Amino acid sequence: MSSAVVFAYHDVGVRCLSVLLAHQVDVKLVVTHRDNPNENIWFGSVAGLAALHGIPVITPDDPNAPEVVGQIAALQPDFFFSFYYREMLKAPLLAIPSRGALNMHGSLLPKYRGRVPVNWAIIHGETETGATLHYMTEKPDNGDIVAQQAVPILPDDTAQDVFQKVLVAAELAFNGVLPALLAGTAPRVKQDLSLGGYFGGRKPADGEIDWAQSAQTIHNLVRAVAPPYPGATTSLLGKPMRILQTRVMKCTAAGKEAPAFYVKEGKAYAICGSGVLRVVRFELDGQEMSAAGFAAQFGTTRFEFNC
Image (cartoon, rainbow, N blue to C red; front, side):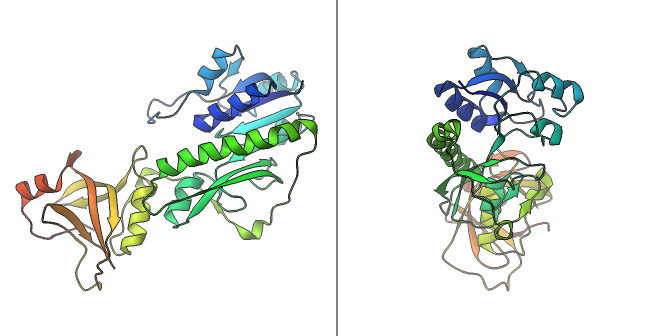
C-alpha cells in the first residue's frame, strides 16, 4: 500500500483527499489551514474529512519550519499531494517523499500559473479552463504534467460556477490517473512555459470598475469577482456600489456619453466606455436594490458614476 502526506484546503482538497481514501492510499498526515475568521468560508473542511477518517491533522503557520519538516520526514511517505494548499513547499520538504510531490492546479497549465487561476481566466475572457495534476518543484506550477481535464467557461459563468466545474475536473483527472501513478506508469509531460504566464493573488480593491473599459471587459470582471468573492465595486450618487450580476447588451454605445447608470422600463443599465451592460443585480450603500426600487427613490435620470 502506498503512503502519502496530504497538504490540502478548500473543496478541491476535500474531493481529492476523498479520491485518495477511495483508492486505499495510506494517508499518514493531513496538513491544512486554520479557517480565517475574516474570510468568507463557503467551502468544505479538509480537517473535518480527515477527522472523520481518523487521520492526524496539523495546521502549521509555516509548513517549512524545521520542526514540521522533521515531523513529516519521520513518516517516510511515498508521495506528497498538494490540493489547494496556500503555502509554497520548499526544497527540504519536497525532498522527503520517495516517489515525488504532486499538486493539483486549477488551470490548464502552463496557462495561469500562480494564484486564483479561475478568476484570472474569466477576467481575460477565456472560454476554457480546467485542472492539472503536476509534479512540484520549488518554482510554482512549472513541474511535469501528469493529467489534465478541461471544462468550458460560458459567457455568463461566474467564478463560483467555473470553480464548481474545475472541482469536478480535478476529481476526474485525479481519479483517472491515480492507479497508474501508484503503479509507476503515469505519464510525465514537460511544460512549455512560454505558452503561459504567472499571475499573482487578488485583493478586494482589484475589483474596482474602470467604466472607461468596454462592456465585455467590465462584464468579465463582474463575473470573476461576484459573490462569494468580494464583488465589483464603484461609486454612484456619492455612495459605494457593488455590481453583482450583469449581461452584455447587443446595443452599442459609441463612447460619446459619459459612463452612467440609469433605469428604463423597470431594468437597470450601465453605459460603459464602449457598449452597454444590463445591471441585473446591484447593491447601493450596502443594500441590494431592485431597478424599480432605485427608480422609485432616485428617478430615471442618468447618473454618472463617481469615477
